[in-house]
Amino acid sequence: MRRIAVVVGLCALLLPIAAWADAFNLTNQFGTVSISNSGISTIGSELLSWNSNVAGHGHSLGTVSFTTGAFTSGGIWTGGTLSPTGSIFDVVGVGHWVRALSGGSSPVALFTGSFVGPITWTVVSQTGKFSYIFTLSGDISGMLYTGRNVSGYTTQTIFVYRNQWYRDGMGSLRGGTEHLGVPEPGTLVLFGTGLIAVAGTLRRKLFGM
Figure 1 (cartoon, rainbow, N blue to C red):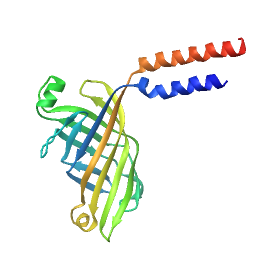
Figure 2 (cartoon, rainbow, N blue to C red; figure 1 turned 60 degrees about the vertical axis):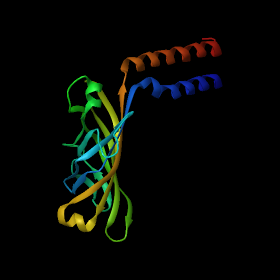
Figure 3 (tube, rainbow, N blue to C red; figure 1 turned 180 degrees about the vertical axis):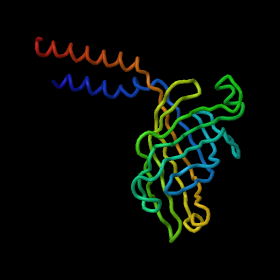
């Protein structure tokens, strides 16, 4: 039994590698954020990196845009949950690097998707009377520029000065990260079949079945 547990444990560690054939890591920064009870959306956030492609100082690789649905619980200043209904999450690349990546023209819609499931709005800190830092995080799903469906998650750090928000409903985006993975169903099926075969072989050896 102990041998079975060890083998199954090793296979479980390998499962994430088998499940995701490709992975894309992105970062974004800057831009303003519109914040209301109806939802939260970005304006002009810059794409700083796409895997090994990194923007030089004072430049960007494109834009990151997102819009959430309305608050379903909690609120702006206490933290809460937002709906994914009507949400978007889009990444557009520009410049020579994206032309080389896609073999097409610039700009290129690198990722077109939306939030899936509840979106979390968390109070990270409050300094003084009016300065707040929040994180917005949630799962995202959509399509890459290659036509492949992907899923992943994002976390965005947002600064809001409450006095300013009273005037225009705006905050500023400090920085964001995204991770997108490309699932390979065929790889998972083969891996699962192999795992079942290994378990069956060990069972026969140990129990004479």
